[in-house]
Image (cartoon, rainbow, N blue to C red; front, side, top):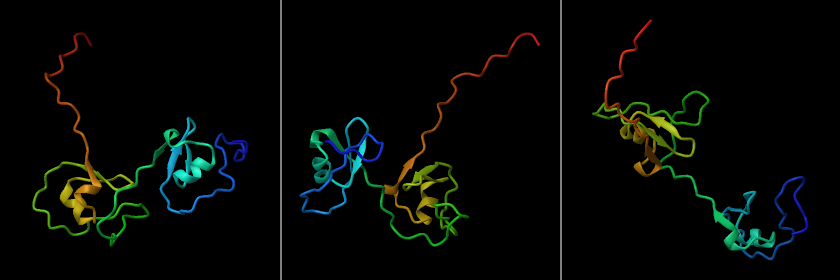
Length: 133
C-alpha cells in the first residue's frame, strides 16, 4: 500500500472492486487498522490472515422506556422481582450494572445480554493484629 490516511499508520483502500457494501468491520495489522469489511481491507493490502472480525455488541430485547439521568443505561423502573439477592451483572455495550439479572431483565436486557460480575476472593483467615503502636 502506498497511500496512507493522514498521518496515521493505516493504508487507505483507495478505489475498490468490492461488490458488497455489507458492514462487517475488521481490524488488521499491528496498528489495528479498522475497515468496514474484509474486501475493503484486502484493497488496502491486507490478507484475511492479517485481520480479525470485530465482535458485535449484544442485542437488546426491547427498547428502554426510561433513562437514568443523561446516561446510556435504562432504568429498571418498577420490577416484579421477588428476590433481593445481590448478584451483580453487567449488560449491553455500555456495561450497565444492575444488582441482579431480574432487575436487568426489567430494564430490557435478556440474560444473553449480560455477564455476571466476578466476586472478589474470600479471605481464608482473619488478619493478625499488629504489634506496637
